[in-house]
Length: 332
Image (cartoon, rainbow, N blue to C red; front, side, top):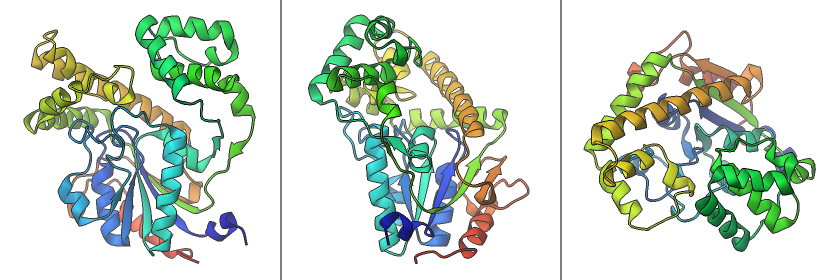
């Protein structure tokens, strides 16, 4: 029996949704109820230096229940979808082997889709190509890099926004390091989806509740050391094009530390930027199914930290998950 066939009946829980919707609180509650391991599916919570501004689980939460892939990369090392997929697959299989329930928790849709839909197997462009791409973004800006990419790889450039420095840098490093553009590799071999029985809960709270939660969370971040965290990050003198340098709150607090804004203005801009991002997240999740319809639930509420007093719509997400787990084999 192949590994894919052997794992097909095993469950993986997914808790997804926009920033500040309460995913971590729900994941903790579900982990307590299922002997679970919480596996990070957020592209910014992987960075070691950014516990506060990315709202990573607290040290107390991590001590209570197993958490994986949180704070494991230095900010100087950019993560990628392919890197995360490899790490997540290893953690999922380790959880199964230990008789624990893997619980993917995060709001980075492309990470989750790499498991549910598979991923194009792009060769590693190498450190020289990555350094070249970052240097071009820094020296010329994203719009100029987009124009350069359009000259040598117009098909890929047509799929990218001229302002999207991260994806433009990735496209250029792939072209430079492999001699082929991103579109070519996307048409080539694809890493298969994870064979499993997926159970998904997507949190989709109302916009006004989400906006209030974002503002409240950022105020707590400021009180609990976000400024010192960003100041320590800046001491590394990292290129601003790195993903960690663009985590919500980092550019805004950097501008304040450089005297460009008041702290109140920086907080206002950070809350607005996070709100815009949650709209994009909500749109993405609304158009990309995370699992088969029979194993998916959308909760139109924001989860709170107390599992006994969660704001619920018409279905209790924990009961939904437990019923779905009971409906099939766990660890064949």
